[in-house]
Length: 443
Image 1: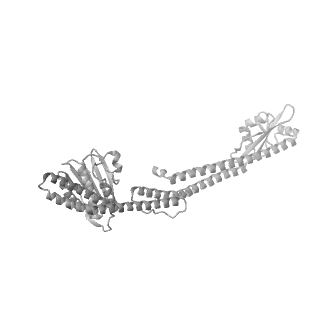
Image 2: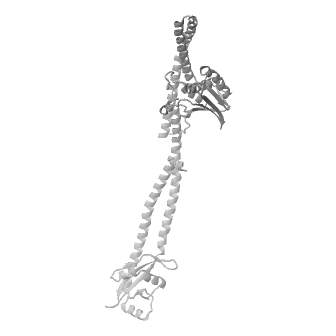
Image 3: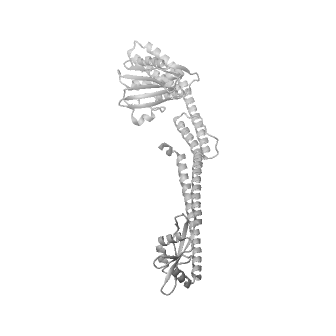
């Protein structure tokens, strides 16, 4: 699950959602409180006007008369905090006098005091205002006035609607951001894979939609770069092949003459040793030229299904002429669609390296397994491991850890395997041995 949050698309969607949520909150909360405070202030002004009007128009003598006889319909509170006159909803008046003692005491200091909103048992909402009124020089009462504040419920509805709209906007913004991010990150992922394949030297044409933005420009630039790299590689290989061909013809004549010289000087010990050395070096040069040609020549289009075990057995027979004391064993079998001559060259290079790296009388183990339409060939030797610092370079052309050779063996093998649609990798190289794995499409 965590890998989803490492994607740019999800990060962009989450950040966009958070920003939208913050914007909705920043806009809706002030609107809600401003609306509520405005309406409440209007209610307070209404109460102020009403209570001022009542206090001016009420006759103190009449109030004294109502207090003495307990008759009337107005909301009055005496010094003992008792309600002695109620006009209207007596239940709300009683409740207000009980829960708003602080506001009542505040009004006795010759101030108009407002209570916070409260609800009665039926759920109706009220707001109260209190003001002191003098009956005579020694007696004073508090006038209380309740106002129905049910219309403030519309502010609650406004709040709920703002929240609902905010949630809807947030959901749609996340969806829109996800769609937008996908339109950005999908081609970026394709370009990343394309660039990685270019780096590995086996990139094909990028399957990108035609775009006219920066991503489209980047894709077009990378495609042009791939064409230029391919063309440069073709030119280099053609140059190598041309040079190798030019060297090959005179080298063949030199090899024939060297062999004749070697035969002629058989009875001349010193000259014969020189001739033998010349013949050996010419053979080495011939092998180098063949490697150059194998590196430069493209694979033929004719591929057939072949038994890999049979090809390996033929290679082992040839290799053991130079390494007779090495033990090479094959386990398993399988077929792959290959060009026999090319794939033989690739296996020969790897097995030769394995023999050169391991001591005589040590086993070189070859395992062949088929899985998921891939044939896996593992070649393991118990020789000296490849140094860790150069393991990433061993498949590069002209790189070698040996004192002899031009460093094309593994590079040629890699190129041949990849031309077959497979891959070659160094599985491990440590004190337990060095293992190369070749994967080919099954035949």
